[in-house]
Image (cartoon, rainbow over all chains, first blue to last red; front, side):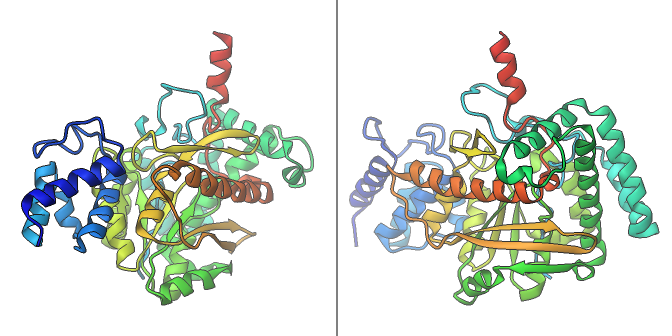
Length: 80
Length: 344
């Protein structure tokens, strides 16, 4: 089971690789929409990538509540 | 019965001016979705009430009168109609549909055709689709995907009668959800919702400021249900997610999001167009646009441009075949704006 730090690193890696966010500082408080300007298609994209990496299946109700990188990490941490 | 297919019912009215497909280079132009629906709910209610009391035959003259009123008073819509018909006439394939160069007579016929389509929609909704004969080509495609449990992304356009989807769903018992852009047609949506709670259940309302509608699409496709989108207008997702394609001699911008969604969710994409073929008859065309969309982060736009280009070519084909059934009564190609810019 990955540690919380490993989960944080994975989430950051997915965001950096998939959304070209290499020049942006990412931390747990980073807001997905306000700070990273992700839109609805990006949200689905992110969910698909994270599902591929973790083997988890996110229900849409779960995804709807995610607002920050910290929320994603908490969600994965709680499920793994 | 499981389909709801009243998508964009309020968008296509001749008096619902707007701009879905922002023409290339028209940066800063108003987006169609920001323009409020101008149709009167009361007027629609009265017409529906009339239809329910007096039936189709006595509704036709009323709707023709309304269409005539708009033809006379809606100069912008009339210009747009004529400009569109001339575009069709300018193509070799489209010219065959006319016995002379389009003028006011042809434009009026265009409005009249819209009125007929409205009454047909009332008929489908109130009397059921069984009163129409649907000659469907390609239904086996949907059947095959349904048998495999795969939800299909159905792309259509403001061309012909989208409510034929309802027939498709009734035939097989499949679930077809329809994406609606509620900001632009909230009044007519409310009316349809009041008419049937089932309609509301099968609508996916697009709110550009929220990711929820896209989640809803994903959820339903994952359940093996189908999702239908009127893709001739740029209405889903972020405004910047659009691709430039050629349609009837000029460039338009069409949404990229359906292609991205199909790629991310691994669902097939089909085109569905239902064209009126005389009283009580429809020809329904279902064609595969992509069995599976393979997208990468860097090549996403190119893939979207290719698929939406194929969509536009088929739309052009059907416009040339039935030019009077295209129901975008506004400056779709941005001709007026281009002229204004050139003048200034």
